[in-house]
Length: 207
Image 1 (cartoon, helix red, strand yellow):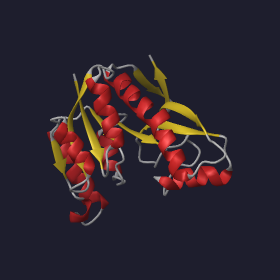
Image 2 (tube, one colour):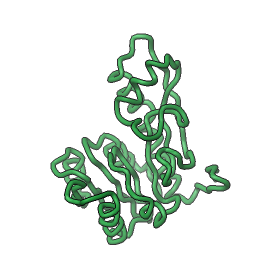
Image 3 (cartoon, rainbow, N blue to C red):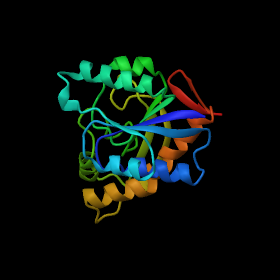
Image 4 (tube, rainbow, N blue to C red):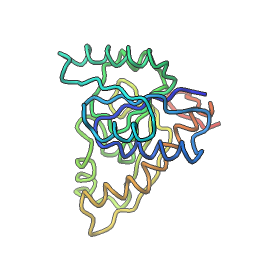
């Protein structure tokens, strides 16, 4: 059974999708053993508490820089014996020292079809604002492995979502979460825990 550690910074809707998937038996071969938040008092911590999942708060603002903070996160991950680290609305970019310690063992969900609308600065509503500005007819979500390149790691799963002509960024964000993010993130986590993911030449193959 693999130890899944989930990193959060806010409300924790993606964390909830993982918890629901775990409780309904959709996640095979792994279990959420710890939730780590970069901010105190966020609702994601309440979600963890409600489901008896241990949680830790490591506030970003208490550390002088990204490297010092990343070392603290790395230390916590090692203490928790993490096999898989999942970014679920984690709003802090960690130093590459963490990624190097967990190669192809960290994954993130991004609210667009990478390589569109991704990279530094593309998070939250900004992604959907840019998609609507561009007039795309399809958007979606991507689960990818985390590397030192922001949103640049190998793609694990993607799911497309139709854009409607009267969409606002908020409406589109909700649809992408409900139809894509909450479905493919638990699936990707389960595939990892079942040892069904293989990376060759920066491409993920599902066994």
